[in-house]
Length: 172
Image (tube, rainbow, N blue to C red; front, side, top):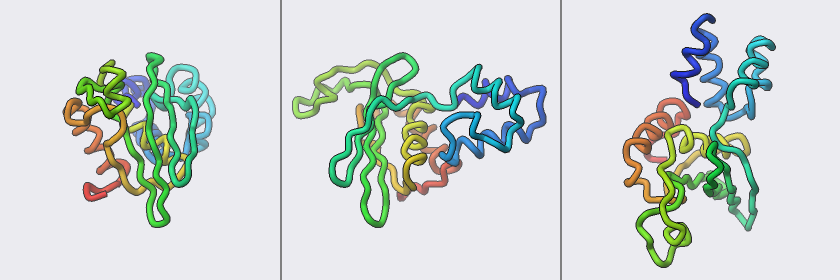
């Protein structure tokens, strides 16, 4: 979610409204603004009609054993994959950082598809929130589509949000 734009949009409202939305967003409990019952109904309606809570939408989920692979659609129609690995003691989200990959590794399906673009910070974080809505995610790995270090600036910003707002520590 672009909190700079949201802050500008809410500029005529009390500051605590933005804090409420941020808290609700990072909780991973809500799929849209309409579900945020701590906001006035008219504000929820305006937000739902003017912006999307998330930058990714579910296309399909494939379950196999202890894993679930989700195909997510981005705002521009491109698709990415993210995986939830469900172990007894913890749930790990495998997150993509790019659409495709420029490295072209012959053993990798993502490498064969070529590079389309880097994911934004919001698109990276929203994959985690997508899983968080379905399960209690406690660990994150960046082993999905793309090479994380080739999207360094957005990755570092996303890691800061993961640590500070999603409260998932660096060792997790």
